[in-house]
Amino acid sequence: MPPISPQLHEELGKRLHKSRDDVLATVRARTAGDTDDRPAIAPNAHMGQNDDAPAGEMLSHNEEHLAEHETNLLHEIDAAIGRLDSGAIGICESCGREIPEARLLATPTVRTCIACQERIEHDQRTGRGPSM
Ligand SMILES: [Zn+2]
Image (cartoon, rainbow, N blue to C red; front, side, top):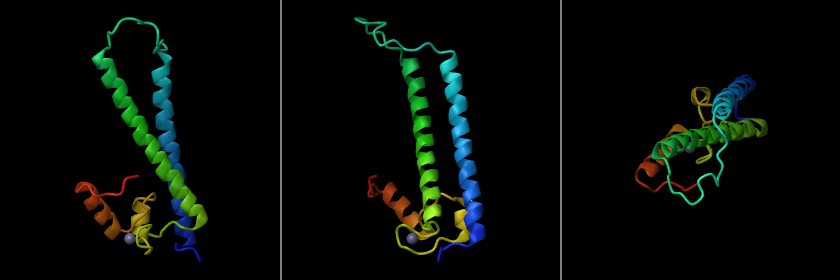
């Protein structure tokens, strides 16, 4: 028997797919704006010169960071949809207990119960967290 009610299952599915669409729309909107007015970077344009622009580097670094954040978010959402399909959603990955409905509704991508989440966050703060 699935750990969550059919109603919760449906609600989480709706929220996860909506979140996924939102993230994809954000990425597309920014990607479109970026590529339209920026010339393609030719790697050999400054061959022999070493005139790196620090401001440009910083900008691209920020964009990379954002994209990485969104990529991680999409991974989380896809994983949650997978768990929803397989019936594993709503079960703490760490201790195997049921995750309360309110917590699932607040954060559909959540994978652990509150107690385990707090322990994991504590471990990360103290540098003992599991390395992914
Ligand atoms: Zn747990």
